[in-house]
Length: 262
Image (tube, rainbow, N blue to C red; front, side, top):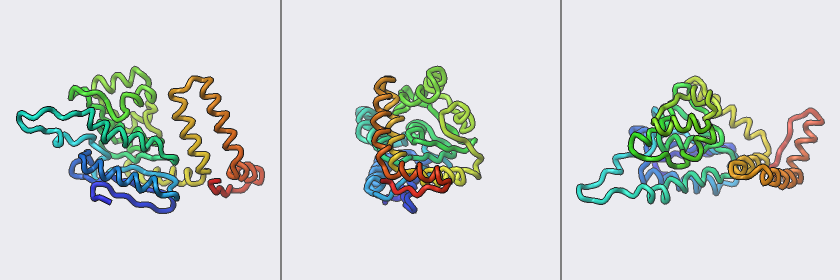
């Protein structure tokens, strides 16, 4: 694995750490290539039950490294749409399509596309002092990497408009209060909080978690009628699994379940 991204796997948990700490893990093309290779490995690992995204050093991710956008005199401007098509959008789509939960562990700054990357996770846990910065407007740009789609769905149009149009920054504590993220904790409790969530997820039936992810994602575009049909079909399949039978048996016997993922 490239030095720009660190990937470890143990006990069904993959931990992917962006590793350009001197640049607050800002993205360059090589960083994207390393991220793509890491996700290839994660997707190919049949034992993986959970993915944790984190950043090395003092922050999570500062978004795009603007030094890479500098053009020689007389050269045409960079095609930012092509960059999104080739690099950022495939990364976000792959993370959302994973069949197991993704946790973002956020400390320091998550800015621009780095904030969008964090919010693409299923569960976001941040330090209270972390900073989610949406400064696209200050550069004459629009929120990307899914940012314009997910912000109003998480915090409503009023707050999303304020964040996007004013280029506002919110702390981890404010983000948790607004419902932008799952939880905010003290700096020295971040690892402990992430590990606690991992233990909870590993104790659940993996096929059930995958079905929940699909149902929640479908709900964002479905009508109520379509979502009711989705729930019916998903529940039918879930009810046929051995894990469902085991969950019911364990509940009735007042014992811990032993899920097999079948």
